[in-house]
Length: 257
Image 1 (tube, helix red, strand yellow):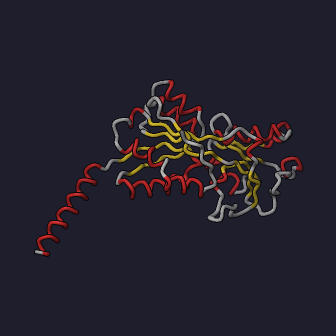
Image 2 (tube, one colour):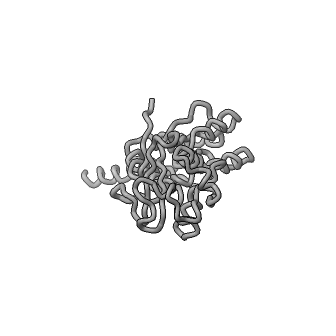
Image 3 (cartoon, one colour):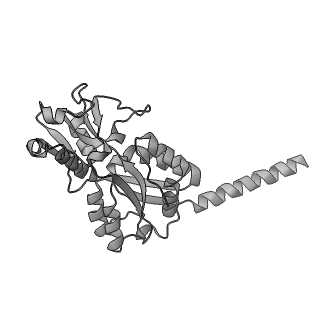
């Protein structure tokens, strides 16, 4: 009798596993490069929780919009700002009403050299460096925020001749980490450690009152409207598990309605 019950339980488990696998799908996601580390971890958690998987592509928000408008295959877009998703909705490439803020970014002035960047950012006015890296402000919201900071500190005109522009925040980090630029503006998530502090080099976490909030919005693209994994991923981004990962990498969370 017990053996028969065990057989039935085993068969039931097999059927449930088969059902989950048969319903699992893969979603292709365009992700702003500042969100590389947290999204890689979130994708792993998403697959464990739902059975769905996410294929991730990282780059500048502005370039992703151009790709999407020219037939890019992405189904979900995680931008580094609010304007690019709104632009895609307006032009008919995204599902109306699906946009929401998944993270609020933090900007840091960082150098791979210990002691170069002080904890007040006074190095920007004192000088003593030849190159300052930032993401292209025309393409990347973190670059635009960096421009705003320098303008508010009255150092923009002085520093502009020293700019080294990356096409996205990942390339900007490479410029600084390899020494091609002594310092630069990047996302805190790129250099934050498990203790919430900068792990290497030296840095100044820019006060939020020196630039407009970096609201990072996600949106469901029309190519993903029929793919069950696409809305499932967006729902998972709002889950406590995903939000804990987002916070771990130095982001804030916006209040959701």
